[in-house]
Amino acid sequence: MRHRLAPDTQVSTVAQAAASVVVLHATDSASVFLQAWARTRIPSPSDIECELYEDRSALRMLAMRRTLFLAPVGDVAMIHAAASQAIGQIERRRTMAMFAEGGVGPDPSILLDELEAVGLAALRERGEATTSELTALDPRLGQKITLARGKAYEGTLSVSQRVFFHLALDAKIGRGRPRGTWIASQFRWSPIERWLPDGIPSLPVDESRAELVRRWLRAFGPGTRNDIKWWTGWTVAAVKQALATVGAVEVEVDGTEIGYLLADDLEPVEQPASWVSLLPALDATTMGWATRDWYLGPHRPALFDRNGNAGPTIWVDGRVVGGWAQRRSGEVVPRLLEDVGTETKLRIEREAARLEGWLGPTRVSGSFPTPLEIELRV
Image (cartoon, helix red, strand yellow):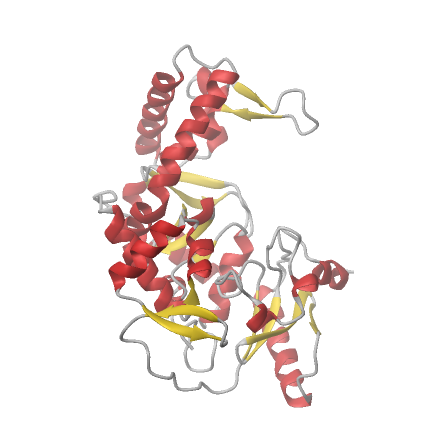
């Protein structure tokens, strides 16, 4: 119900959909739109584009677990202080090591500062641009760094990629409209003032972490300490401190583990009307907990890849019962992995048809294909 998947619980905007699960996973461009589709009644992908790139009610940002998320604009400062800020510090050290190893300099730190200033000034003048367009501003931005030299997985990285990566991590720029269609993944950069006219305010880290855990417990609780540690990417100590700050209450989970709830959220929740939902790869609900057997059952091998990335799933009343994929013909094909009864099966087929109509001519597939998705695409 809180994830806005049950009947009559859907919201009207992408930002509200994101807030219902704290943030939407944004590693996969199409998934952002499909997560919003599942939780709203927004008429078309173009309406979502309008909210994201014209109204700018939400921002893509690198945060928990060094993962890209879509956050409501009003929560950006809190998430930046709670998660992105620490990641930025770690990544800056990595960049300095990359520059030094790749012979970029002579002083990598000064160079990065100078190029960040060049890039930010250009973006404020232009309004928006891609990394490739901005690379032409200064020959130093086009320098290549060799990574894992001599290894089988040796590769190269341009200095400009790290420069704009850090500008975004430091909350000075943001990812705007992509090049191409709504499923494209190469984004244009814009100054952060396009989302937040006064920039992102600085907030206390501990208070922000506590607030992030409060939001998670409200959306996903009860959850274990391990669930929160995995979702945030923090240390055990940081999770303990945040739980203590919000006054989380210990509860029993499945009779075997200690979980946590907010003190004002201990009463039983009214059971919503029966519901079905087709959720996309990397959906925020599917990826919300580290321990998943209670809603996933025996279906993990078919619906997750080897790295723990979720593929498209079919949900019935709070548990996963199958998966789905879109074929090259455009047909959305569901596959049930357990018996749900004739009536529920028909509801799932209707939901698949509704999604197929919403997608229209667009073809989507997960960035991390899972066994069942690969099978269904044929």
